Length: 179
Length: 110
Image 1 (cartoon, rainbow over the protein chains, first blue to last red):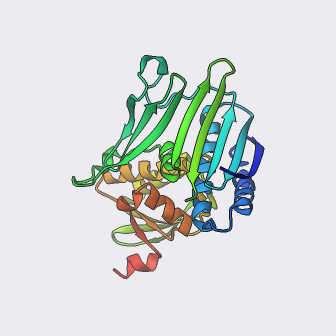
Image 2: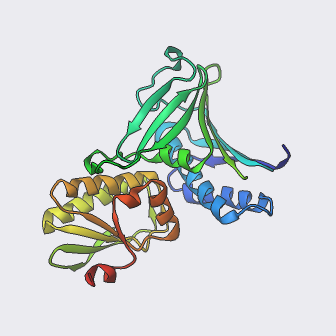
Image 3: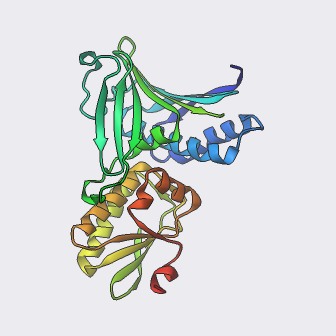
């Protein structure tokens, strides 16, 4: 798989910096895309994914800066958000060591979606979102109020989180297929 | 941030006067909507045409305000969403939850 472009961004972890950071990354991606790709459709996905990765970092990481590695290949775009801040604990997961590989842990559920973390190893999970079929009357009092993971999961083709125990490195990895 | 535009019999029309709807102002937005509801006791239509950018935190605040008003048999209606924000509501399927209009005129002409 041929790599077309790659760049590492070092971005400030502040609320005020999100918009300019998103624009900086977006400009790089759009200018690096193969001519055959519909830039408008990709642009929306990249924008919401970067917004939510950075917002999640501000909420949970507790670091001053965050690294964003962006790679554009012929077939996909890979975005890795890295920091050495607090370990991320989605839902009630406190340790992956107690789960078997392949275990699906329900994170949130309402009348629209169910969000799961699928255990891929003792340090990595993959987020999966399933839409509810809507046969029943929607109970709006039960609607979830946290959309960050859901937006990234639904905007991408693969979304994983990995924690390196030895170095304390958090890596959120997003892949968007271009085909 | 939220300014009353017009009070109708059954709904209050308000303008959301921010460009960036985010983690920074979501809680304040929700507090202002609930304060308006406590004063007027009716559904609220929010004109969001000035909003250029919205994040998941602010979406959560909209949903939270909506759930509060629904518990009093009132509603939160959204007006003037940009193309990207419309796409975000479709992605999160919140377009199935909220009544969404292009302008206040669409509401008043009903």
